Length: 88
Image 1: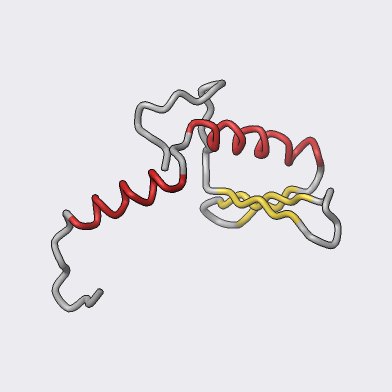
Image 2: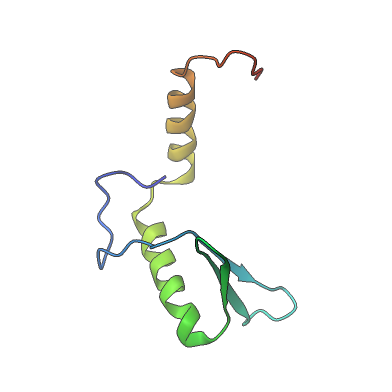
């Protein structure tokens, strides 16, 4: 979970959703899929992938620890009203 007041080194945020893929059979191989309105862009070249890896590292550094994130999500979920017709 990324706090609203988090300080992200470089003040950069992703312009769209993205996924980073690493492959077990070739550990040095990394690909990034960036979601756009009409298609997914797949990046495999180091100069294309590196900005995403750098941004991801900065976002992870600014994020809360996983256990704190889970706790805050549970607290928020407990405050939600049930939706009619949806069972938990």
